[in-house]
Length: 221
Image 1 (cartoon, rainbow, N blue to C red):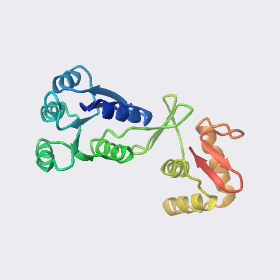
Image 2 (cartoon, rainbow, N blue to C red; image 1 turned 90 degrees about the vertical axis):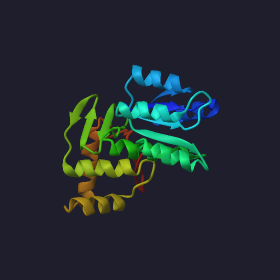
Image 3 (cartoon, one colour; image 1 turned 180 degrees about the vertical axis):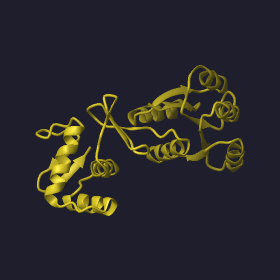
Image 4 (cartoon, helix red, strand yellow; image 1 turned 90 degrees about the horizontal axis):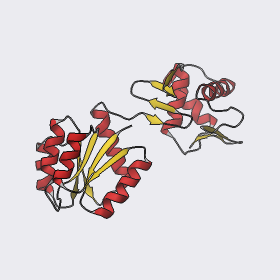
């Protein structure tokens, strides 16, 4: 699990944002003061720090310096018009910044981008104890690695990249053909989806991960 240190002195922002990040699968520790943030950096390892520039007690800049000394990537949360603060933060080694107000989804995208550049991209979590590490091509179930063929893995990635969206059989065949360069017909696709479900522990009779939308296609929620 990815551990994030959120440093923000606005209690409404910190509670709302931490709850959202935890729903996204991150572990979130909170601090409202400079000294509190530095203490938490000393006591526990973090994968990323989200720092407000202006704190009621202290500043985000010393926290940034402490985080970078420990090799922790930093994203600054800045108010509009704080261009000098942005430049100073980037000069100190901050990895990115985002201007308030921002959309939570945009922040998550920035977080994942920084984690990816830092070699700390989180594994994607599915149901049934399944995790997927797209960068390393590793799929695990309950901690044990699952062996997927190249086409099975590509099929899984297509579903992951379109979570919550309906995928027609034509769309799936198109994406697999483009990447794999192998001929996959409609019947073969059915076989691959069944194999993938079995390997992921998804009951083919009552699937919960890769759901069949009758007459239309498939969807991974």
